[in-house]
Length: 260
Image 1: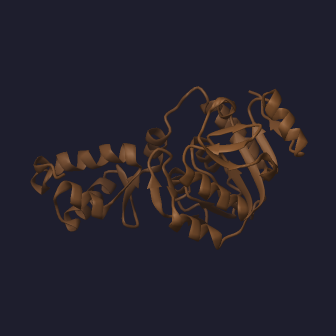
Image 2: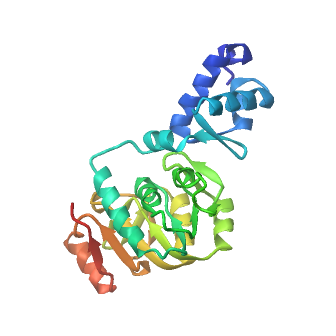
Image 3: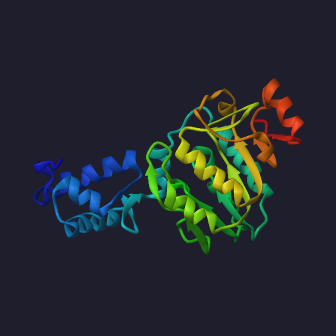
């Protein structure tokens, strides 16, 4: 529905609306913005260029997203597990070769993995996570592959047939998997759509490294991704609870526990 007060003659209010909605959506297309605000696509492009000049947004193909720093704050607010994410991410990237091709999952822990990649890393990163792609879009890496598709707002991740079709054509040395939950029966995502993309990424990887904080041990999520025997390694900030620990031992997976 068009808001009349946000038409072109109210450019300041309209641009404020764009920034505000990017805080929750992560990405907005030119087409959608023109439709919602009742103005032309040319007008929206002028707005976005003005916002980019002010450092408020980053222009990407087809629309705009927040700048990397702003996206980090809005997409994944700091919580009591943030320091633990930084620790497990720093340990996890130590498993990467300097020229490896890797895939990074969506969510705050995946974002932490992307930020933890050392300056010496010159390989290729593949991801369906918008914050990960934003983090790595500064030009430091020569190759970053974006798996586009339908944007899943809650996880700021692309999912769906387009994402999966792009994934199927690729291969990676290591996939850093950061699911919503894990128990003795397997790994879980918040939605079937994301679980399907995560399975695809597991299928193209030589090794699957699970990177989690203690929150994943107590989180219930509805969509099963895969059984534990699909994992190569687990990196966590706490030892897995008893039943899960036993299940990991049965499939030969030894957790790397990164204490605070």
